[in-house]
Image 1 (cartoon, helix red, strand yellow):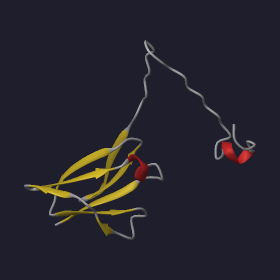
Image 2 (image 1 turned 30 degrees about the horizontal axis):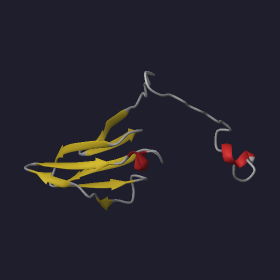
Image 3 (image 1 turned 135 degrees about the vertical axis):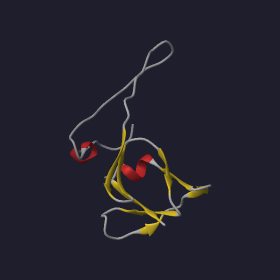
Length: 101
């Protein structure tokens, strides 16, 4: 039911995927998260799931482009700063993270 289906409904990859599973079926969903150090106290996070980072720092900053930084909403645990990054944030592309001392 509903309106007509157009080509734009399949953008950007022109793909339609359907899944149906129920009791007794086994389902496996592969996920990944990668944190790469790019400089002293600087990292690049790529992930397709929620990620929680714990870095030894006074605070954390995040950036989409590595140029414009904003204070991250992290929480302190002793010497560590813990940052929860939702999958929706990294699905748009890598996230730059740096430690503020």
